[in-house]
Figure 1 (cartoon, protein in one colour):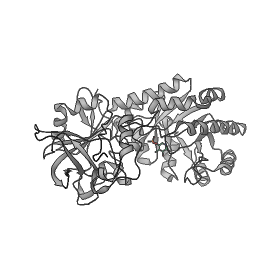
Figure 2: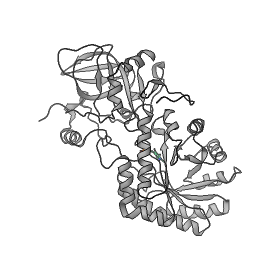
Figure 3: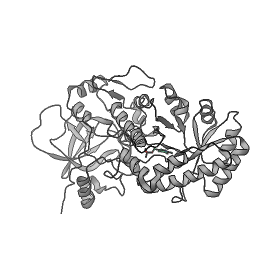
Figure 4: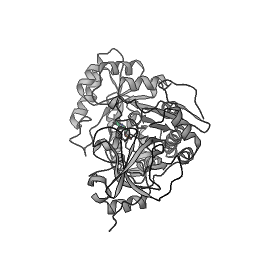
Amino acid sequence: MVVMSPPLPARERPWAPKLRDSPMLWDIARAVGGGPFHVVHPETFAENLGAMVDALAAEGVAGTVYYGKKANKASAWLRECVRPGAGVDVASVPELVHALGNGVRGESIGVTGAAKPEGLLWLALRHGCLIAVDAADELERLAHLGETAEVLLRVRPPMAPASRFGFAEEALAAAVRRCVELGIKVRGFSFHLDGYDPVPRAELAVRLIELCQDARALGHPATKISIGGGIAVSYVDADDWARFEAGRGEGWFHGGRNPARTYPYHQAPTGAAMVTAILRHDALASRLREAGVELLLEPGRALVDGAGFSVFPVLGAKPSGEHLITTVAGLSMSLSEQWKGSEFLPDPILVSASPREGGPVRTAVAGSSCMEYDVLTWRTVELPGAPRFGDLLVYPNTAGYQMDKNESGFHQLPLPPKVVAGDDGWQLDTEYPIQEIR
Ligand SMILES: *Cc1c(COP(=O)(O)O)cnc(C)c1O
């Protein structure tokens, strides 16, 4: 029986270990007052985005990749979305303003999100954004705002009958008819599915093409379908994940806290390859072409994959039974997975301030608040030496939902700053665009 949890080394893009092992990491730490802090790498985002735009083109499909902005709040990504075939998907006024302020034009912004406040609808209309609507009353409100709305009607997936989002079948047909009366242009249809399987996405997309054709018969300019986000990411290699899943048990976690559910940290296909798989299933690509329909995507997590990491200064470590508990400056709120009763599983990496003797240790990792449950890593992970005050503990690949989804000013601590890294240097990520570094 394996008593100790096997390692789960993160897959990383070359920039991340390079920066982590360079003096620049310590320069940044000093400049931001120690930490915690997050590092983001827009060039990797641009690579991910470019690969997805290319995947559409390679299958001969016209379309747009909208960055699902809620995955990470940094401004740096937005500048990369100012390119043909790209846009941003937002769900609030601040998100919309943030995108506009960084140069993304309204025509390249999708506005989704459940029931939308009046101000968001109004601003979206003013800027000619594509608005996803999934309730009849919202259509009525839109019609009274005095601009011609262009909407996608969001469909409730047949496989998710209890979902709060999307019109059910009959309500959808009624909404398409009502839009004719209200003077709202139905530009097409959308859905967002849980899970990471290409097949149901392709199958529902085929259904949405038919809906476009029906809507055209009523005079609507229905030429777009959005298949939402949920493009898969692999954080670790297949073998490591299989070994981990096969053996996992309470004994691997401090306090026996083996999470009931986690993200599938390895899966296939991922990223642009998953987009290709969707387009090839059921001849979706040729159906889109023949029907003259564009494919829109709203990936969040997959675009920031490999494009950031989080750094926590070590405050100290003490024994707890067979292992250590390392406490870091910062909170588990900067690792949001913990706040779903789950765990961010890729191994953290110790960057020691000084050489370490004594060999490897096992440790759980706690945040510096006074809450018993403020724990970044319940799993007892192996580090090459005992962490000490002054070291840095780096969590790899945190840009997708981990970094800043749940952060708050708890204990009146400031939010950890984000640092934008490029080949030549770094700068703080700020709300408004400033000179880019490359
Ligand atoms: C959250 C969300 C996305 C992005 O999802 P990812 O899993 O990060 O790709 C896209 N579209 C909608 C409507 C969403 O709610």
